[in-house]
Length: 539
Image (cartoon, rainbow, N blue to C red; front, top):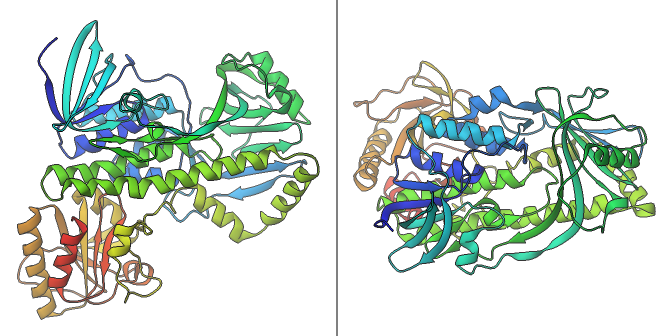
């Protein structure tokens, strides 16, 4: 065995969550190694829906354009609830630059993320089978087999991105609490010649459920449940004839399917680790939580998990925050994972209803979906843009009680609002986050010499303490703001998005995290007090 290979962060697994973590780390030029057992990215389509909030995360990473180029922007769903006249759920209600479900095979997602990682100078160590994981006071030790040779690694921190059957989780004796749901679903990536739809189509009745997801190339993902085939011995292999038989059973007017690219049966379960952190190890994606695929949530949760933990690791490894700062990963992400487990389990039970209960479901569902506010609530919920962290104890402790009800608060997501930047052209918030990481807006309203001087002092003190970590901007409503120096860029809130939509007023300071959530929003014009709040955020 060779000598121990040292690194700051070890990623186990290069599925979507592991690749997202690797990209986030590489972007920050952090020291990491990613080990993956497979010799190449998956060729299977697997998860296929990218939600709006994940696309926003891709934008912050700088990889969103490739996804938009290769994916299919599904505008909504047609729900055939027991009859032939569908109810339509429109996704344009989503309060995001991406008001749709981007349909793209997981194989493409992995390929795009790995190519982007390579363009940044990073790589995946493939054909490394992890055989042992052990935690000590010094860090996490991992032994992996590579072409018959055993290699030993030690890292300050480990990201377990190794899926539902996580080796890391087993070796560290972390329970995976929950249960199997006992249902068998069929899945096929096929051509459906008689179907020409821009919407996702879902059929639900007493015989089962079938959903059709359109791909960009004109083919479809078909996934569903045949009630007559529940409770049978589990098998993975699905033939085209079996898929057609199930569709013939469930649909009143079945479609012919052909040219299969991938066919499979799969079962479902809902499970979650009790804590997303175990010492120096953090569980990300399916290693932390699994659930059924209804609503297209699973892969998105994992990608967002990765985006949450990496920026926190950076500030700890750079000495700007203590190790305990990393506990916020569990506090922020675990409640969201638990909500998804509950939601998907509830939706599966609703799908399972039949007879009189099924008729009541169909009638109430159709009635509700005629309401615009119901559609808006469903669309925004499924898009993950409501996945916010304002209820954690840390974020509650940073709240400013004097803010108006409408003002944005710690832990909430910042939409990509428009700005008039540097007096030259329009720019929105997200490109600034992508470029600088932490951005701090100080709202000065208009020319105010004394407050501008204070803002310069605040920026200098922040820079002395955090060594260029935070980029400070002055924000004015309009006009021309003149300063003696050029260190602080000026933003003009001519669209009034920061003022009217985020609740910023003269003297307010807003610190935004690298993941696009609010660190804090302070109404006091005392910038010494605000500086103390910056320190409290990183404590």
